[in-house]
Amino acid sequence: YDDNLLDRESIAAGAQAAPARVSRPDEALSNEEVRANIENALEKLSPEHREAILLREVQGLEYKEIADVMDCSLGTVMSRLFYARKKLQTLLINI
Image 1 (cartoon, helix red, strand yellow):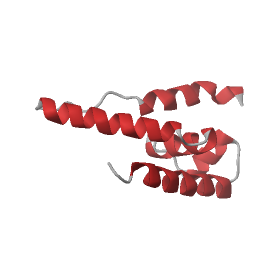
Image 2 (cartoon, rainbow, N blue to C red):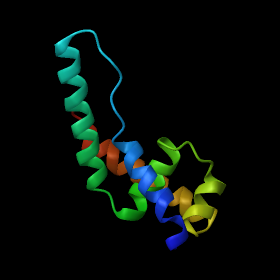
Image 3 (cartoon, one colour):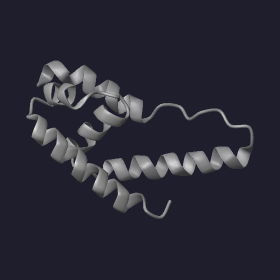
Image 4 (cartoon, helix red, strand yellow):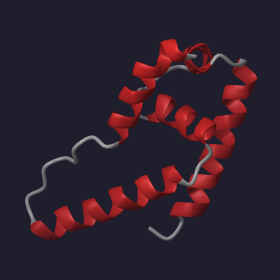
């Protein structure tokens, strides 16, 4: 479990990566608001769901790789991603 600590910290850092450059200040504000909303929604997920979604969507890992990192079955990864996406969709519906 502790062997993956650095990987997990880099995943969390990836979720806070700098936004893309924008040409207009109003675009920057909008991007910052969207980013803040996404970060808030991620914080509302369980640690297991948050880790699974960050490994998949930020780090781009395959399901099998996620299962290895999280030390769980492929079915568990699929379930966690399904419920994480469902919860995020509910939380972010009004963005």
